[in-house]
Image (cartoon, rainbow, N blue to C red; front, side):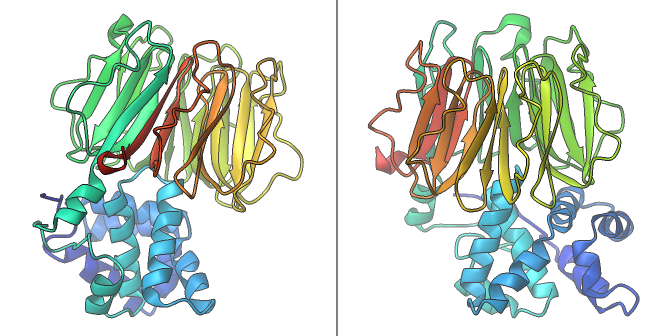
Amino acid sequence: MTRVLWDEDGLVRRALSAIVRDPQLGETALSHPQMMTNLLKDLLPDSPRESAVLIAAAQSGLPEVLRTHLADGLDLGTASRLTAGWFAKRMPFTRDACSWAVSEIAVALGADPSVLAQSTLPDTQPYSVSLADDDHEQEDTGVVIGWGDNDEGEIAVPRGLDSVIALAAGWYHSLAVTGAGRVIAWGSNASGLTDVPPGLPDVTAVSAGRYHSLALTAAGTVVAWGGNGFGQCSVPAGLSGVTAVSAGADHSLAVADGLVLAWGGDGSGQINVPADLPQVTAVAAGAWHSLALTRQGTVVGWGLNDFGEASVPAGLTDVVAITAGVNQSAAVRSDGTVVAWGNDEYGVTGVPADLAGVVAISGTGTHCLALTSAGLVFGWGSNDCGESDVPDILSEVTLLAAGYGHSLAVMPDWAR
């Protein structure tokens, strides 16, 4: 198969080396998002894709995560794999992009590039486009499995859809991103939900709301389509350097340079971002409330709070992932446990007692899905359409998405 080139001409590697060796900058710059933003704008004006990923890496404190693993006695290969996985869970970039960022930072910190490539990233060669190994092709082939409500065709996965790297389930439609950066949409086309804009550039992540959709491009820009009755598709002019997006019922959220940008409906204060919000790594737009995950691993909520959905439990820390639904919220902690709060009318805050080892969570509607490190999926909450009845066929799942009444998951084709 063919992969997208990262730093084809080596400019990024040379720029990072120059930054680290500069006596007035040094390694500190690698963990300073604002400094990295300014430096990369000057050093790499023609590499917005690479710059966006590296700025996100600085925003997440990626160098320190890598150093911590090495200080614990892990070899470079293991430390880099763990760091890349940690980064991928917090940022909506492809696996290649996350691994590439870790490798370039490791090299800037003094790692031998040849050793890194051989021991850490056998399937991600920044300077090679060709991969003939069938095992790698098989490993990257992700197919979508859907279950639950299908009144609008939201689980009628298009024939031939594979190599999926990102997934989103809205209220009445579904979205997937392929390894080639293409967005595929299916389900209801009310308000143009599935009318993906032609010529959409390389996409790394998507989010599906009630009647609108968001796509994050590799260049760090946002494209929106669908219903715009509340301005939810009116992306702020000049918005760039975006690392995360989320679509609610009638509002939209984005993270750029650690800051949260919000637009669209504000009937419940859902776009009234707290003025004192610290640096943020991820956001989750519920129906009429919003959540932000801070760099310190805490969660901040605002907007509708009739059921306590914006009232984050006291003492909640070490959070690595968040999700927001109609009137409820949930978070995954670094120890793999899940905490949920808000409306429990459908049992959605009643997290299964035996649920452990969770690495990802999704809950756009009134049910939740959780993915464990073993590739297993668990569902709970509303189940009127079987949306919480996880199919027995699922194994080695890599992605999941919980819509309003339907569910989606990505698993390797060979695992079926």
